[in-house]
Image (cartoon, rainbow, N blue to C red; front, top):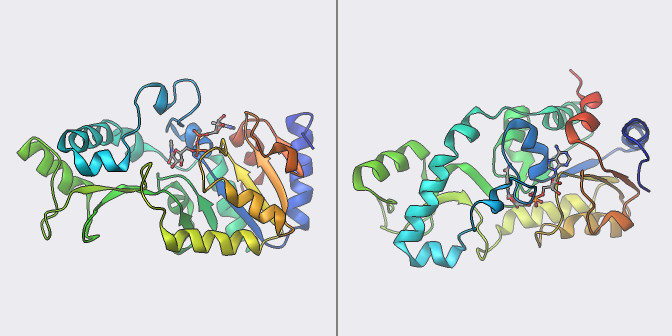
Length: 253
Ligand code: NAD
C-alpha cells in the first residue's frame, strides 16, 4: 500500500514499528543525501558525472587506478565532513531500544557507525570508503598513507608488503561480494518480522534481493524512497517521501 501523504505514512510506520519485535533496516545512498553525500542515480548524482571504474579495469590499468584515487581524494572533504542524518539517528535510536539488532547497508560512508551502531552490527555489502586495502594480501591502510604516497610518487601506490594495488575498501562493479557480509545479511533478512528498505533504488543486485528474501520468509516489508522501485508492489507499506522527514519523528534519546 502506498501512503497517501507523509503524515499518514509516518503514522502507519509508527504502528508497524511498535508491533514489530525484530526490525532489519536495509539502507542505500538515499539515507545519506541529506548529509551532503550525493547518491548515484538522482539528477546530479555521481553517475551523471563519472562512469564507474569496474574492478577488472582497476586491477589491469595503472591509469584507471590513478583516476580512481583522484576521484576518491576529490570526495574527501565531502566524506570527512558528513555527519549522520535524521534517518541514521532514528535507526540508532531503535537500535539502542533493542528493536534493531543490526543494519544492512549498501553505503560505504561509515555514517551508521558514527550514529552509534557498533561496527559488528553494521553489515556492509559494498565495503567502506573511509580506509583502503591491498587487493592481494588484504593489509589495511589509512587514506592519509595513500594520499601521501600518491602525492610523492604521482600515482596510485602499491602495497608495502606484497606490491599488489591498494584500493579503497569498497566493492566495485565486477568485484566479488564479501562472503561473510552476504551470509550475515541473509541470516538477518530471514529472521526478522519487519524489513525496512530506505533510500535504495533497489536495482543493484545481489543486494536488492534482501527485501524480497525477508518478504518471502514472512516479514513485513516497508519501502521508504522518494522514487518508485520495482519492489513497491510486494511491500506492505511504501512511503514516497523524504527520508529525513519520514524518520525524523523516530529520533529518540
Ligand atoms: P541509488 O543512488 O541507486 O538510489 C538512491 C535512491 O534514494 C534513489 O532512488 C533516490 O530517489 C532515493 N533518494 C535520494 N535521496 C533521498 C531522500 N532524501 N529521501 C528519499 N529518497 C531519496 O543508491 P543505492 O540503491 O544505494 O545503490 C547505489 C550504490 O552506490 C550502492 O551500492 C552504494 O554502494 C553506492 N553509493 C553509496 C553512497 C554512500 O555511501 N552514501 C553514495 C553513493 C553511492
